Image (cartoon, rainbow, N blue to C red; front, side, top):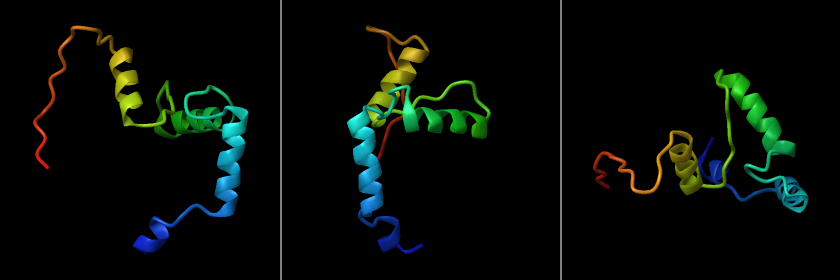
Length: 83
């Protein structure tokens, strides 16, 4: 697959499907429709008990911290990041 194909703009069918999901309110973490179907199939595929679709990385991190009990005032140690 070429870079152009990999990062091509959405086709009309994809735009239609996304619009339908937005209209129904079936977006990430909604617990309904296509996101729920994806979560169920992904759980089975990777063999885990839970799966939650989220809209971006910040929400993913916040959800993970909440799941393990990180709260206000708790410290989280991470490795240094060098770009």
